[in-house]
Image 1: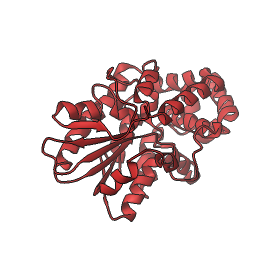
Image 2 (image 1 turned 60 degrees about the vertical axis):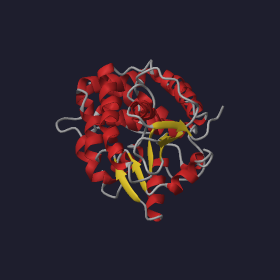
Image 3 (image 1 turned 90 degrees about the horizontal axis):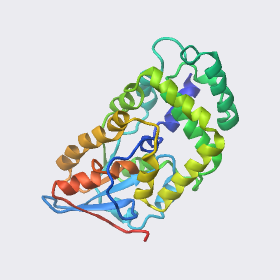
Image 4 (image 1 turned 90 degrees about the vertical axis):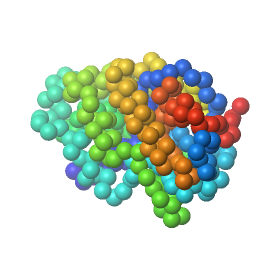
Length: 300
């Protein structure tokens, strides 16, 4: 069980924004790093859109990012990552009653097991006590890693790196939500029946189709093309209500916190890239509240 939860923790920061619809149709410059100024701010703050599974080696290629990080005195992530992450996640990812094979039935469980073994090198039985959404996340992430699409050096995952580096530099680290809040949203807002359907939809999709989708997603991200990412997500299998829970409500809760912290500080905010886009995205919401939000450097 300890080994299993080490695996779960390693994939927890899979960009939930990468599997949901992006809201809104705003067209943004091709940039992952944005500067926030104006209104009552004494110092600029920065927004950086991450792709949780890629390493900080890619972030080194983003112009102006290192300078922006150095200027900040507080580094903000979706959550604060610490050594207690595994124990905090466990109650939200494990089925309280029954097992996955009992939820899916023999035919669907056998199909899942076959797909997991061939595409991710995993057995369904070692995941049998987990909720379908947790299995889905592990499946997608492990398949992505095995595909080689995310190789970008030997660094740490971006979100982990920025927080670890902040602590090394004696910067304060803040989270926009607790681990428990994020886990409850990711693994507890959808019925188990719906979770099973989404998991089996991914199984039926097949390795070739998922590989092409993941390849396109990486191309969009490395081109710093937020509009491309938004466009890809518009055809997601997730419902509008699920999108609202995973993106919109969280963005709406985050903006007031940023407004509280920004006036007397320079923030470096590193969150999943799709949290920057759309009508409820951080960029648009901050602009509507009177701040100037502009790209630090664009790729085109």
